[in-house]
Amino acid sequence: MNIDQRCIETAIAMNDQQLLRYSRHILLNEIGIEGQQRLLEANVLIIGLGGLGSPAALYLAASGVGQLTLCDHDKVDFSNLQRQIIHRTSTVSQPKVVSAQAALHDINPEVECIALDVRVDAAQLQELVAKADVVLDCSDNFATRYAVNRACMMQRTPLVSGAAIRFDGQVAVFDFRLADTPCYNCLFPEDSEFAELRCATTGVFAPLVGIIGTMQAAEALKLLIGIERGLSGKLLTLNALDMGVTRSKLNKDPACCVCGNITSPLQRD
Image (cartoon, rainbow, N blue to C red; front, top):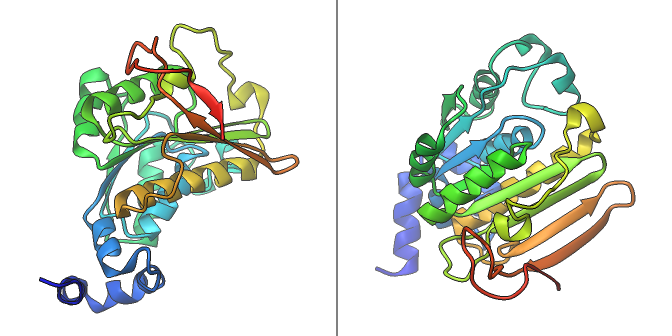
């Protein structure tokens, strides 16, 4: 079967509303009908529906990712509304996943949103990651990041990690489908003493989480479509005060307890 025939068959698989809704994606040579069909068939796991998970989930749903699994055990607080744009004043005190599920349904009712209002244990996390095509870590603590990293490594599921505090944000992509990819633990070793900074005590610039969360969505979409240009094996850092951006190449840490192999973990492009 040639490319034109595949495109015709894929186009037929989409209804008229879908062809219209995703027409601006379909017009892009890098996506086209086949790329959009991959999104419609994809399953993305989002850990955390706060500042980062909010914009990430909104753009993934709007882009037509077929299934979004939302995982967060927290409830919407009034102080969240300054930056967690998926939630509304009317949803304060609701579970975040329920609030997010309703907002995503309004944006794109075709997307299946599974709301998990739980703090998952290691076994549950392994099961969720195994079913996902891509995982977005939008959590706000190292313990969760390490657990998600380990699960993604074991299941060979691509991981898009984000973080934001004060005016500083970062995004990294670990494509565990590739044999030589580093992991989050290479960058921040679990046995090191990194300061655990929280928005509740240090503050965070509202648009920063929007920028980082949207970057996470963009990297996830490219992984799903098969666009190779991106942040795989790299760390992007952003300072929102002067909009300074740095990209660093990540290599496996030979002493990493998760994926240990070669060379030092950080090398400037």
